[in-house]
Each structure stands twice: as C-alpha cells, then as structure tokens.
Image 1 (tube, rainbow, N blue to C red):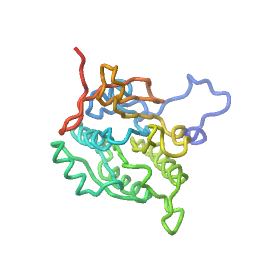
Image 2: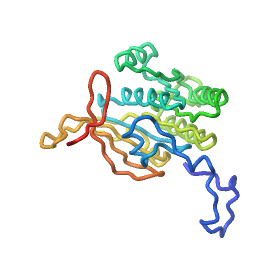
Image 3: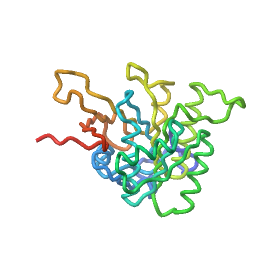
Length: 247
C-alpha cells in the first residue's frame, strides 16, 4: 500500500531531499515488548504501519498478540483487539491464564467497516494516544460485497486493503493475523504480502539437530520501515511467551 502522492503535492522532478516527511512518520511507538520493538528497528513501530502476522497452527499466534495488546496498554497507548475467530468469553479465559494485568479494548466485529468505525471512535475519544489494532483473523472478516454473506479469497484482499488505507489515513498501527496452510505458506492470495508494510511469522522449530528444537521462532520477513530477516527465539509456557536469552 502506497501513499497518495497527489495528496502530498509531490511534483515531477522533485529532488528526494526536498521532501518533508510528515511529523507522524518521524515517530516510533514502543509496543511494550522488547523483542518486538527490536524487530521493528529498535524503538517500536512507525505510525501507519500495516503488518501481516502469520504462524503455523498451534504456534501461539493469538496468545502472542494478546500479550502484545496487554503490553501496548501498559506502555500508555491504546490497543483494540478484535476477534471474529473466538468468542470474547474464550479470550477472557485466556487473559486470566496469561495473567494479563493491563488488558485491552476488545471487539468481535466480523464486518471490516464496523471494525474501522469502532477504531475511529476510539481515536476520537483519546487522540493523544497511539492506536494499535490487532485483528484476529483476516480470514474471518467480511466487507459485505455479497448480501448472502459469502466470502472468498478476494474478500481477504478487499478487507486488508480497507485496513491498510485506514492506517495510512489516520496513522493507526494495524496488525492482522493471517492463516497458513499445512506447508506454512500464507493461505490466500499472494498479493496480500505485497499490500502490507511488514510481515512477521511465528513457527515451531522442528529440526531435531537445531539448538532451538521445539522452541517458537518469531521472524520478521518484511519491514518497509526497518530491517528484516531477523529471528527471535521464544519460550512458551502456560503464562505466555518470553524471549529466550542465550548465555
């Protein structure tokens, strides 16, 4: 997803050094989780970032994102965790198990427009705080194109496009959980990977020869606002994830 150059008045022949970057894009906001902040350049995430977060089945995608939402709240910012994947009662039970102390704003909208409307209301209520939206998951969202509720692979594309545009228009930070197939590849149109600014992936190391066999690995596969190709080794317990530090 690219910025609308017409709206920022960049003329043909302009020298790149003459372009002023919007103040909002000069900032980064800590997520409250050190390894995720480090993954996105060291200090956190840039406003307007749209991130796709995938993971193999059972790796702990929802658990990690709930911990992240809790940490964002602790850091003084606002996290909206919207799930159309599980009921809010199930999410509350997991929050108890993870011993989350700060919580997050929860939602269960399936229609992407309603999710965006809720996000706008949250921004209007407290514009001084950075808004993070975590959507679980892309495959469950609907843009309402079909009156009978039918969704298909193009529904995902349209929903992600709307979320990316909302991020660019309002400088919100959006993380969308995406599903993968049994081979660990993104389930859906490959264009989804090109629409987003960042792509992170969580998986279990199944190589018995590896020092990290059985551990969860968090990898940044794409990041337009920073470096990529970095992996973090995570320990997972009943109370969630923490980074594994090697001595």
